[in-house]
Structure formats: C-alpha cells, structure tokens
Image 1 (tube, rainbow, N blue to C red):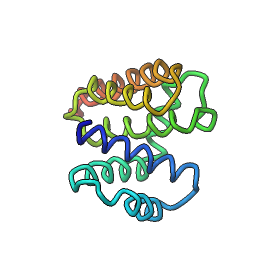
Image 2: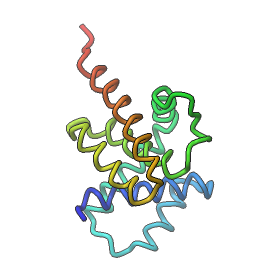
Image 3: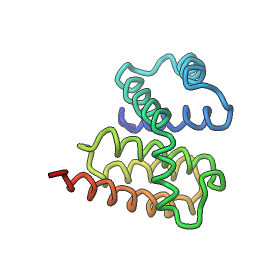
Image 4: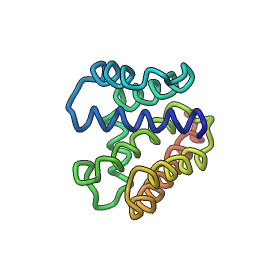
Length: 143
C-alpha cells in the first residue's frame, strides 16, 4: 500500500474517532499516534494535514457534501462514509494539484475496504459532483 493511501486511511480513522468519540482534535491526534507510533514521518505528516484541514474547515466541507448528496443529511450518512467524504473533500481543498480522479479513486478503494458495497457508488457520485464544482470555481478568477 502506498504512503498516501495509508495517510488517507489514517486521516479517516482519526476523523471517525473524533466524530464518534466527541474528542477534541488534539485528544484524537495524541491517542491515535500513540497507537500507530511505527508510522513513517511522511505518512503521519500527510494524515495529520488532511485531518487538520477537515477539522478546521468542517462546516465548509459538510456544506459542500450536503449540497451534492441529494436527500442526505450528514447525520444520516453512515459514519465511515461521512468521514471518508470529509477526507477527500479536504484533499480537494488543500491539494488542488492532485488530480480529481486520483482523489476519487483513492476514496473508492478505501470505501471498498472500510464500508459497504453500496457506499462505493454513493461516495463516487458525491465526490465527482463536489470535485466538478470546486474545479469550475477555481477556473473562475476574479477580474
């Protein structure tokens, strides 16, 4: 498994822990890295960055997701799916140089591992739609 994939999985796990355990970001980071102390600095750095962006921009990210997940509110989504979408959207926002297709494909592979088969289609549809919106918004530069 690649370094970035492992980082994305760790970011998902930290967000899940934060979401379900109602812990602060710092509490999550401390306990998570105590359990995963063998992770390389590169894996840890990217995972921490995705987690930080997702936590710091949570309202914006959730709003984007809800706008593109027709008839779904965040609290009604499966916790794994909700947090996987947050990680991917955080990557869209903070790493625009990463191709949209790569972010989506990585999210789908992680969904196959951690979620239900039905989730793959859901995650794909939402991320494709969010990614297109963000991509078109970045092409519109103020005059």
